[in-house]
Image (cartoon, rainbow, N blue to C red; front, side, top):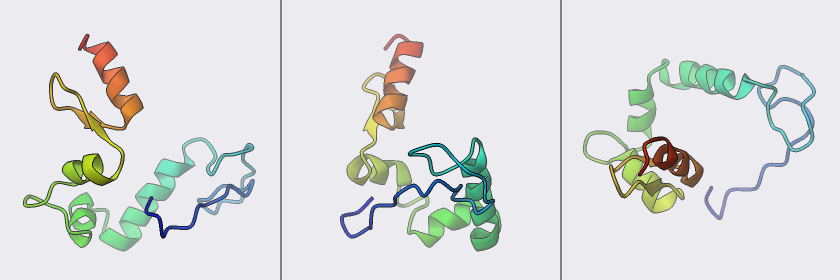
Length: 98
């Protein structure tokens, strides 16, 4: 999230637009985040992750993973170069005994 991006506040309704009530602090009903993500990908990028990446300036010559590490709070496993959110990398390191 950039500094100019307004912070979203959960409303008690699922953000996918289905109308389902969600728990305190939640944006989505269970699984609806992935459904909404796939729907947006379908309507804006023809269900193509490559088109999504290209639209935002990423691809073979500009790594989205490098950008996530530099700008998005992601980290890299020092043992194998796996990149992800800090909690994901901690889980990865425990799983593979790094």
